[in-house]
Image (cartoon, rainbow, N blue to C red):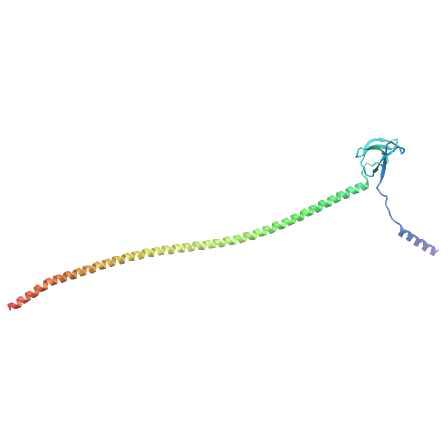
Amino acid sequence: MIRKLLSVLLLGITLTAQAETRYVSDALEIDMRSGTSNQHRILRMLESGTALEILEDDKASGYSHVRTPSGAEGWILSRYLMTTAPAGQRLAETEKKLAELELQSRQRMAKLSESDKEFINVTEELTRVKDENLKLAKQLADIQRTASSALAIDAENQELKNSLMQMERGQETLRQENAALHDRTARDWFMIGAGVMIVGIVLGLILPRIRMRKRSSWGSL
């Protein structure tokens, strides 16, 4: 008995292991006929998900008169018609929308990445401009200090020029006074020389007379 139970269990496990799961395909084709019965000629086969325009609904026969997107008309069983698209088509549309959304998401992420790169570039450019501004400010300060020094040097130079001009004026005054002194000295020497000459002439005239008088007085003695 136990052996039989074990055999049944092993057989069940083997059958379970060999079982294969399959699904009913939603790929379906239905025939469009020329009339409202199976005896009418098949005009074409319509794939699942084909959009049809309803021209007439025959409740008695269970057929509907339809028109395809290409303009062909015929009759198909009403029970094959749905007000919504088949699940497979809706799934495909959903997957398509998801793919489009994913593409849009990737594009937005790419744009965001580009924006991040642009932001980084702008930040780096701003930093560079700030550094350049600091350098220019330092150069301006150096120029201002140099200009202040140049102004001070120019003012000192101007003072030296003024002092030099005053010294030149004083030197010219001294030169003029020296020239005047030389002229006065020359005149004084000329007057002295003239005086000596005159005295000599006078003495030359007087001394002989004095001698003659002395000789006369000696002779009378």
